Image (cartoon, rainbow, N blue to C red; front, side, top):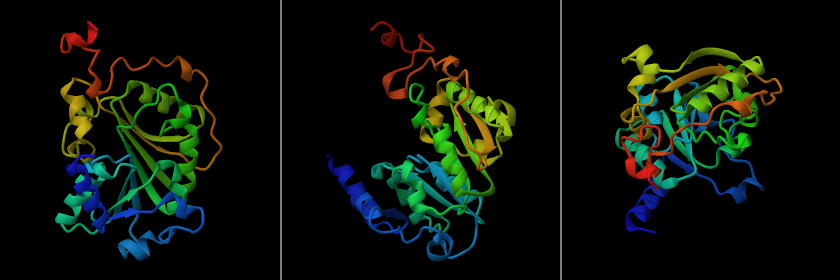
Length: 259
């Protein structure tokens, strides 16, 4: 492991805005802030908003700056990623931002039912072959419904046509309330809103490659969910992740298509 990564791990460990709780302890004791994030950590009763798979934390920090009357918690399993946003928030003296290092599948160990008001999912892996791992899949959406307060919302912001279509289909099939749905937010809304003014590291890469950014805001509710018929027929995305090359525009990366 490189010295830079070791330094980041050490700084994350010392950062008071970052919480790390070993998985082993969850099997024997309850996380002390579960159900008490507002009272014991943020020391207010403002709504709590989660960003799942927050990466470097650009959206968590950006939302915290836009909405001083809400508390934001970025969640990611990678400590070296969290370092960037946590360091910025601490440096800027932000009191409505925190980061939690854990697996998203363990959220119910850290938050009580109804404790969360909104959930943001920004540029997740679409998991085109594994429905059970999709962050907008029925298994995960049911969990969000248990954590969210009545009327609580889930926001998806994604470059993936596959995930956008799947999430739309899943919502329609299960009768979920879709409050907003847009397949090109920059073409539709322009700039001047948190939805377009806050850009993650990966979002800028997708934009630079000519991809449109999609957005869905829905209310998962508490009803039982089932996978929608026809989901297996949704066309798969025709591009790879940025680090592995791009095959949707072959003129930009001819070496990839000649392998």
